[in-house]
Length: 450
Ligand code: GLN
Image 1 (cartoon, helix red, strand yellow):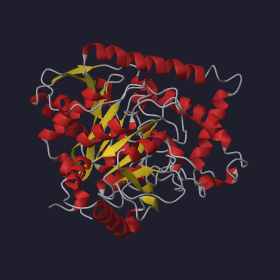
Image 2 (cartoon, helix red, strand yellow):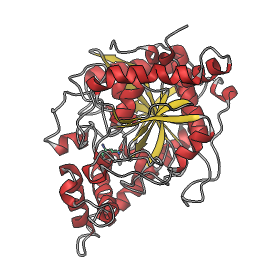
Image 3 (cartoon, protein in one colour):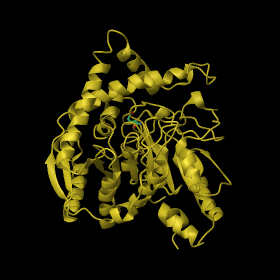
Image 4 (cartoon, protein in one colour):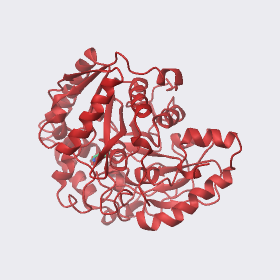
């Protein structure tokens, strides 16, 4: 048999059923690997020994009962929650255990993992590169086979972009598909928790587990996502695939573009009907996002006032402070209608672009990120440059629609992700497209040599 840790979640479940190994052997195999690799990669902030169940890695911005939860911030460095986030409860009910808490950008603000107060996570494909962010540790953990699957959170791309940089599958569900109860808030109108996995099938299964009604989050739909393997197997013959021309302009690395174009060709070979579309307000999305997010951040961060969590603001990092200040400014009286209210209007225009597009096409496909993983340190002192790398992912959050990132090739030895966006509540179709692509290609099987 293959190495236990290289198995996907669905493979692990059937191997456990067939008694090919025990849960103890499964956990020990992962723990051994974590012991060997974590010192080099800095993926886990906390590791749980002696657990039983299917081992999952959880972004440390998701609350875990009796397990330290830091949001990768010094201000929460000794915070031990007394309850579980709803998603954790749902995972436990399905035989999953938390093997560890993963590193990420402080309070999920960033795109490279470098804003963590506890040091940067390395990209398993090349230790001199960033793993992407903000769910840096969760992506690297799945990529390096240090867990069966992971959870991340995505406010503007934080599941999809690190998934793309590490060559794994990641899904940002429809806003309201998954409970946010117990997710430490960044920007509440955009945040969603989602799966980060070794295959599309695994992502569908984890979404099935974590979605559904929650009395603690009034935004959550009572409709549970259900995996229909018959639907996943249906293929994409005749499916209409829109490719936004705005996602292929200036700033897109030509080497990444080449890989994406080849992936589009593959989708055509599989029977998809690929056609160019336009999302005309895309060019304003980034500016709107970087007003709306800091505004919500400034409100959400007010609870860390030095009283409730014991520690003061000297324990907050530069990027978080920058957003608090920006947001406080754009919400202040006399300015809010020029900034926040305008950005909210632009958000509606971005949402309408998608609604119009989805009258004609079933999914929208393009790159996840304009580049592959960049060098550690390359953008960390230039926030605007860092923000620009979110250009293709933020629109899905502004519109509330689901987005999937799947491995679709390599550029100079680094993974490239294909982004598949769908209608609100239609995770099924984007997963079907991802599954068809995965069945027809080998990219998701590639692993870094560690
Ligand atoms: N990189 C984006 C930001 O810094 C996205 C963050 C996220 O999705 N949590 O806001």
